[in-house]
Amino acid sequence: MTKEEKREKKKRREMEGGEGEEKDNDEDKELRKKKKKKKKKSEKKEGGGGKEEEEEEEEEEEEEKEGRKDGKRDKTSSLPKPGDKNHVVVQVDGILSSATFASLDLSNPTMQGIKELGHEKMTEVQARCIPPLLAGRDVLGAARTGSGKTLAFLIPCCELLYHAKFMPRNGCGVMVLSPTRELAMQIYSVAQQLMQKHSQTHGLLMGGANRRAEGEKLIKGVNLLVATPGRLLDHMQNTRGFQYSSLKVFVMDEADRMLDIGFEEEMRTIVKMLPKDRQSMLFSATQTTKVEDLARLSLKTPLYIGVDDSRAVSTASGVEQGYCVVPSEKRFLLLFTFLKKNLKKKVMVFFSSCNSVKYHAELLNYIDIPVSDIHGKQKQQRRTTTFFEFCKADRGILLCTDVAARGLDIPDVDWIIQYDPPDDPKEYIHRVGRTARGTDGRGRALLFLIPGELGFLKYLKNAKVPLNEYEFPQKKIANVQSQLEKLVEKNYYLHTSAKDAYRAYILAYNSHTLKDVYNVHALDLAAVGLSFGFSRPPKVQLNLESKASKGRGKVSNGAPGSDYRRQKGTGHGFSANNPYGKKDSGDSRQFIRG
Figure 1 (cartoon, rainbow, N blue to C red):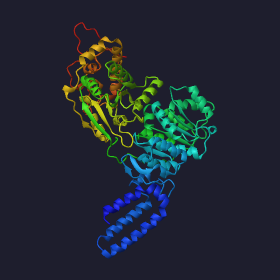
Figure 2: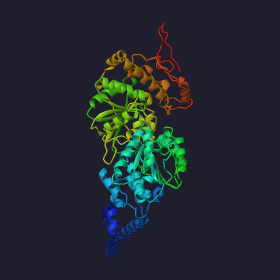
Figure 3: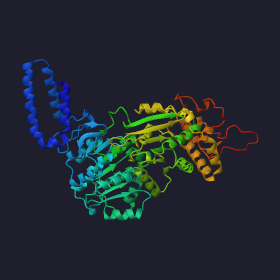
Figure 4: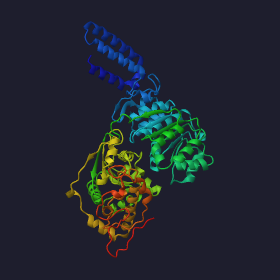
């Protein structure tokens, strides 16, 4: 038997490992032993090459004994061993593994819920996380968005509630924390489907919802609870009758995002108020110092499972990614041209501020490019409606801030457009994570960069994000600048909205942490104004000095020890400190500072 035949045989054994091994385990072992003995005898007679093949067979036997599943023993050595009830063989094919849910010995109600969701095989993160979670281990999981981690923690939670025979009078047995309302709604939607055949109760807590109605439901008893940190802490401190002393499982999803948006204090308070005798799970797409601190506080001797650690690329394999270099004054013209050509596609466009989303949504709808929008200043009811409408749609354009960039499972997105650049590679990865989700996801991503922002590509390269440069011929970009300026000038509401968006863009630009890439003092504000429909930059109130001073000492090429003021002037006379350029005689306008 050749080496290739042996490898194929080994693969077939692993593919059949889940269900077949449990049923015919002993018989298969005996047959394999007999076959090996026969081979060894024949090889000894024939001679030549026998020793090498015998050594390979011995290595295969040792691997089976040691339970090596994917060649990474260091971080997953505590997973259940072969022969254990929850042992599964993981062989990865893209995002899917060879392991099936049927091999996990789950309860009938949970299996029915999984079938309703349309799943048979597990993803890699599910195959590696579910067995140790079912065994009661604390888990610190690192996996990119769209990898299937929602089911990875919900399935063990449902199983625990089922086997513990939780009832409403027992109160809350499982808490799942989510950073945003949209993600909380999505997790809860999956939990509802998964628990259709279970008798346990479930509920959702989040800001913007009816607090009294939530409180009444909590008092009656909610066994599985999905919540945002602020609203959960509010009920824990103020709702009498909210029973969580019997809590068995505490889950933190997108923990890095919760810490990034300022929930660190609430998270620590919640953890301290919970029973210490519990199982905890923490999932995060990135591992930061704050996440590690939270893990130390909330987890007990956790098992680390890093699904993406060995990947050469940080984003999903099905994403075709690129960037285009476009001057500030041409940015909107290119966006307009692109959207007009892709009206039959499903597109998400990311902006840096709520005001910018609002203005561009009003403008594009006004000029007959239908778009929807989601941002933090909208009422929760509108955000919820827009989100679910876009999820169900086969095509459409959604303008949004990063509120929609983390964890949300929006199916069949064709294009991700990052009109305003992300703050760092981590944010880029989460934005791009909205496309190419699931088992056979495909999608495209396009990043807009002005010439002064090309330094961001270095950071993306270091983060294992491959990008190709896309070129758009100038002749094919619709030149609607004069019509845009006339529209913004004559329409009072659009003019006001554009002014707010322009101001928000500059403030957001100034708040970027990568000061060597995003230098607000190097912005050509006349060109920026043109992209918002202004022939001259509008009079706005800004306060940039305190934030800008943090970036002093660096220039766009990253050389230390230089000062922003040493950079060569553009000659246009416009800057963050002088947004109106060179004054004509008699021009009394001044730059207003806050």
